Image (cartoon, rainbow, N blue to C red; front, side, top):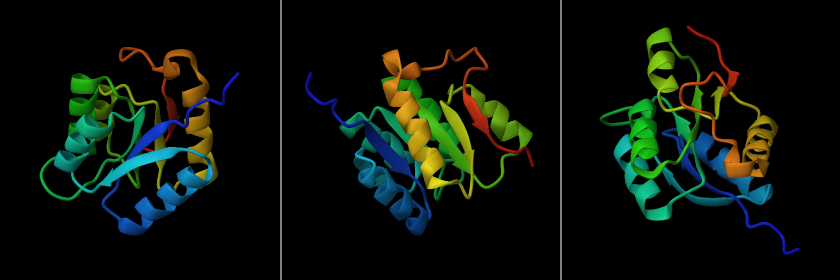
Amino acid sequence: MPPKAPGKVLIVEDEPLIAFLAQTALLDAGYDVVGTAMTAGQAVANAAETRPGIVLMDIRLRGRGDGVDAALEIRRRFGIPCIFTSATVDQRTFDRGRAAAPVAWLNKPYDLVQLVGVLDHFFCMPEHGLPDPSSEGAIVAHRIA
């Protein structure tokens, strides 16, 4: 049986150091990082071009729109799920984000081993383990501010 192709991941993060650390960890783990973006608009355009299997999505981004806006648009247009990351998430943002049916919520600073573990689990699942948007099936590692 031939080896499985690496999972394609788009990183959306407005902090260059965090994006670099995540990209390095994912590349070291064998993932194909198809790009990085710092704004919601860049995220949607990059997803349209590269069609990743999943998006690592920071909630607070530069420019117009936030990560929730981008995740909702990417999910609606391309069916691509996300993993949300944020230092703090208020209840309203958390409720908005649930509509994007995220695979997981990771609280910053997140552990890179945990991130790789979530991606390993996701890419090993049939149909990539996509949660039903109406379910409570997403992995949650967050706190409400």
